[in-house]
Length: 67
Image (cartoon, rainbow, N blue to C red; front, side, top):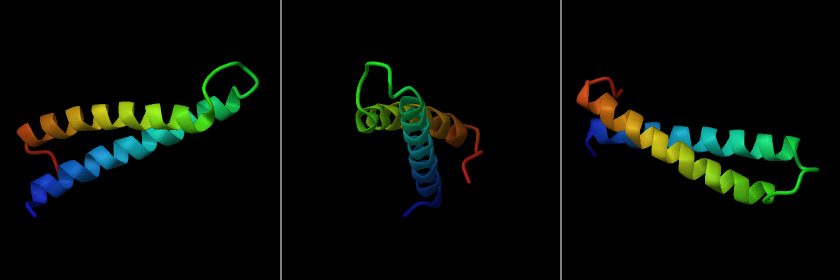
């Protein structure tokens, strides 16, 4: 595979994992409040993190900053 594409995928996956962990921790911290279960919050966090990671990866590839 192309090394630039692998770097972009690594960026997207890394942001997705971080978003999932942050959303899970925030939801677990506020578990006494009404809201979605922690697993659903983690899934939404992963989607938001992946979207942000895709933006970072695309702009990073245009600036030749993707490892």
